[in-house]
Length: 210
Image (tube, rainbow, N blue to C red; front, side, top):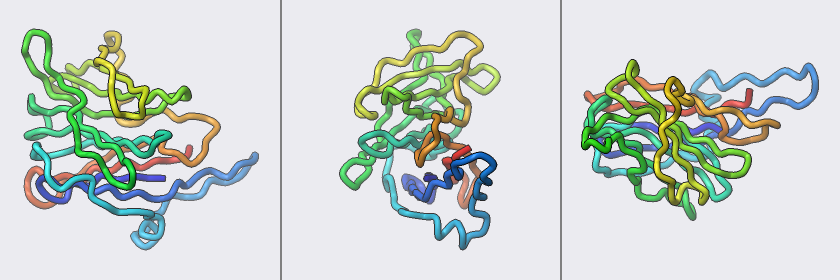
């Protein structure tokens, strides 16, 4: 399956969910290629819908998506602009056929009161069904430190954030893969490009069986 969070206009985000391109089991079996043409990609889309249409932030970026026992969970960083101190990690869950209102689940606010932007969230569901949220905090990539928090109820509630050891940032843009591979959202590869008016972004997260 693949998911793409698309910034269409201020306060408007769309998710496009498509099929998993899983490898063929057996030794020596070739793996199918990812869709290349617009027509091929259109055939792979299962659902296209808005996550939200209004929100208390101006821009979003670096989406991540995971599949839990209760459904899809997606997160992104959002704020005034990329790198601004008010950029936090926001999250939404797909529940009973609809996306929940985005909530602010992680901030870069420090005990001293100083605040830093958050960056590049990565969701990953561990084999014991613990949902993990990795992200980075800092003024810029050169000064990042890694953070992690976990959920035991499929993203409804979260533990307090824990700082990773110095020099360990966690996954930067992709989550680890679980084996044996099966149709899942275990690995997301986000990318972005600026579109339309300033501050509008497209962020995509493509799940791949590798």
